[in-house]
Image (cartoon, rainbow, N blue to C red):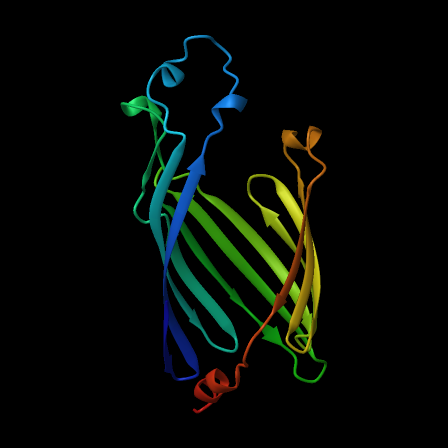
Length: 204
């Protein structure tokens, strides 16, 4: 569920999402390193159902955006076995993000630097720094750097309501010995338009 408030060329949005996790363990495919593992000797829950929720606040206008959100608000516990041994807690995650778009109306190009800071209840922060260049909002490409030692590149195009994008992430840390990077392909379709929102944002 999302609720939007429009004022002075800006939009303040609140979002709340419920989610439901279902985990299943196939005991026939389990292989333990050591015989007599306490988890397998107890009552192993082969199916678990976990409810949870996310919440976020997002403030934007035609030039900049800023937001904060939290995932796994309930910090639910996945119970694999009896006692505390089989309890796995899903810790809450926090996100802080923002960016600014420098637009040149004459050339049609715009530049958008942005950041994303992530951490958990255990305070293990990680930050992403990105920069993207747009041409008339129909074409874009960019680069990113992540503080854990990885870089990435992306590009995309828009045709009417259809968005197509591609990104590649490459690790700079020692894990690169075992990984050749990751690929991501995005295809989306946008229903409706921004006309109503832009009327509110530009009314002043």
